[in-house]
Amino acid sequence: MYTTLHDAVATSAMDAESLRSAGHDLIDRMADYLAGIESRPVSTPLSPAALQARFDQPLPREGRPAEQVWDDVWRDVVGDAIHVNHPMYMGHQVAPPLPHAILADTLVSMLNQSLAVWEMSPTGTMVEARVVRWLADAIGFPESADGTLVSGGSVANLTGLLAAREARFPGCWRDGVARTAEAERACLLVSEHSHYSVERTAGLMGIGSDAVIGVGEREGKMCPDALAEAIGRVRAEGRIPFAVCATAGATAMGLFDPLDRIADVCQAAGVWLHVDGAHGASYALSESMHGLVHGIGRADSVAWDPHKMLWMPMSTGAVLVRDRRHLDAAFQQKAPYLFHARPGEDRCRDAGRMTLQCSRRFDALKLWVCLQHYGANHFAALLERTADTTRSLHDKLADADDFAPSHAPESNILCFRHLPAALDGRTDGEVDAFQSELRSRYNTSGTGWITLTVLHGRRTLRVTLMNPRTADEHLDRMLDSLRSIGREILG
Image 1 (spheres, helix red, strand yellow):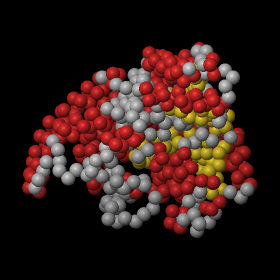
Image 2: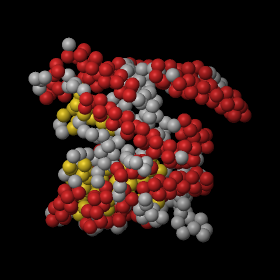
Image 3: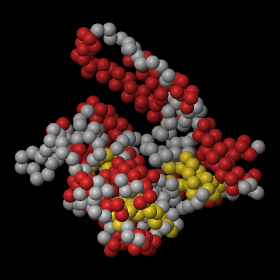
Image 4: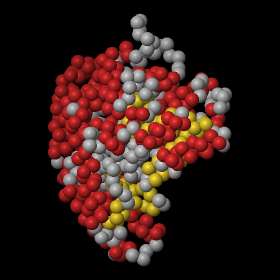
């Protein structure tokens, strides 16, 4: 479309009007998309190969009119996306973003602040600091706490556990595990249902995935007595438990470890407590559900994903550390071309010192805008609404002859199995294969979208009710559709 450098550069004078015109059109299309979301299939029936063929084209050397490109986007990209805004989407822990979070995300892209250093984001750095303080206050952390926004729970877990490693083995960042006294004996005690990123963190830190030791559980939750026994056992073996990683809102069933009792064990043993609250830390905002995270304020570090249960667009994660000195020590690097305290400051404000990421978006703006506009009580209401809907689904499953809930829900995640009478007498393998095929056909149908997991060695259907607009009518539609597809499978 642009044939000369002069043509390309000359258009910069028209950037504002181009943005205004195309922006209005895009916002109108986005609004229409949300208004008509229930008329769309939730997912695509197309295979990865079919979708790959659609986009198999050479690098464009010449441009095209923006209108044509955006038409292609809506037809080829949006048309076959997974529509997480649909109330029949009940799949992974991906939120339908709040409207003002979507708008703030757009402004973030336009401002394009680099939040690694204060001088490249003078207001952004302060907004993020205030958001971090709000989150720290919400979970009951003291004034000594600090934190930073990150891409998500995986980096938050890594950051919190790096802080734990340096606290227990000073100098390990500089010298490495092999040359740091006792560090080769480090081990990490975790919930048996912990997120895979915790094991990955152990590998990245150099202690090895074999150093990750599962703690016995009771009813799907870490057992404090088993934790105390595990700490004593590994110490008797000559190993050093440098941290315990508990979970608030486990991915599989959404259950919460008893954090306060776990904190008692860690405090008595002198072991760092990290809480993976990527999913569940948000419940600290709800007065009626705060009990799920009772004791989280006693942790040494917490991972929290506002892009889950605070309905932010990805990516908006956070890590909080009770004592900022440990966060400062988690990453130690010399970069005088970036990081430096200004005159009169006792601590550098450059947030890039505290995280793996140097290229850091101004993601805090999304949460700052939404907390200012909606208020924390609004988020509490959304949390309670999705939990209430999940309990309603549990009741429907328990009352049905052909469904069986796998557990009582504590939050908005529930596992269950479809067990029609035609499965009577079938082997475990056949019943498991039925659950897998049922989920596959249901998702391909476009009626809805759910996930699958394994509990106690058996395949199980799983839903996460992320959309506050999901209601009883949508639950009934899902169950009726699963029944219909189940009959097709069983003939």
